[in-house]
Image 1 (cartoon, rainbow, N blue to C red):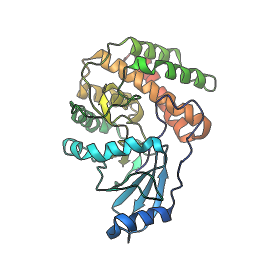
Image 2: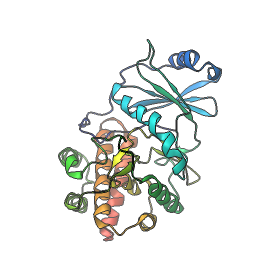
Image 3: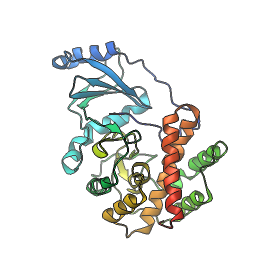
Image 4: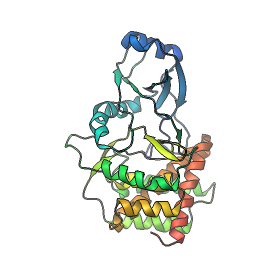
Length: 312
C-alpha cells in the first residue's frame, strides 16, 4: 500500500513536498493501538511509507494503519471512513475499506484508520500487463455511477477544466523552463480539452487514480488504494488514469473501447486531466521527488505518442 503524491489543487507551487505537522513514530502507533484497539496491539508495527497527506504502517501480516500527517488530510480520511463501505460491494477490484477507525487523543490530533493489507507493488514500480485494460475499464464503469446528494465535493477534482486552467498553465510553463516535455502536441491536447463540452452527468470518482495508487503483482491489478480524494464530479478526472497506468497504446485504445469511446468531449477532457496530473507530479518531482518526475514524464510521453498517432 502507499499514500498520495502531490495534490492537483492550488496549494502546490513548485516548492516540493509539504512538511509533516505532527511526528508519527512507532511508539505513537503502538500507544494508539493499546488505547483504542488493544486486541491488535500484540502485532508488530512497521512504517511502510509516508506520502503527502498520510503515513502508512503495516500491522502484522493482515492490516495497514493510515494516519494523517497534516491537517489538510482530515476531510480525506473522513471521506474514506464514511463512504468506502458503501462503494466496496459494487466494485470488481479490491479497495481498502476501513476495518476499524481510531479517534484523536491528547497526543495525536486526528482520526485514523485500520485497513486490510493488500499485497502488491505500486504500478510505477511494477507496470501493468496490457491485458489489464479490460479489468481497469470494468472497474471504472462500475465506479462511475450516480452518487447520493450528500456525497463529497472536491474543489480540485471532478471540476470543470477551466477551473484548473490558471494553475495548470503556470505549472506547465514552470516545467518547460527545466525539461522539454510540454510539446506542441501536448499544448494542442490541452487546448482541445479546454474547448470540450463540460460534463453534465457527475458520478462517483476515485479522484487520484495514478500509478502510486494502484497495486500490481505479476502485471495484474491487485488493489485500488488511497481514496482520500473520492468525490462526485466529472469522470474524466479518473479516466486520465489510462495515461498513468497503461504503457501500451493498444491497451489504452482497448480500455477506451470497453469503457465507451463514443463521447469525444469526455475523452478530450480526460486527456486534459492527464496533463494536469502529469504537471502536478513534475512540479513537485523536479524539486525533491525523482519518483514523481519519472511518473510525470511517462504520462506526457504517452499523451504525446497518442497525439502523433492521431488517436485523440
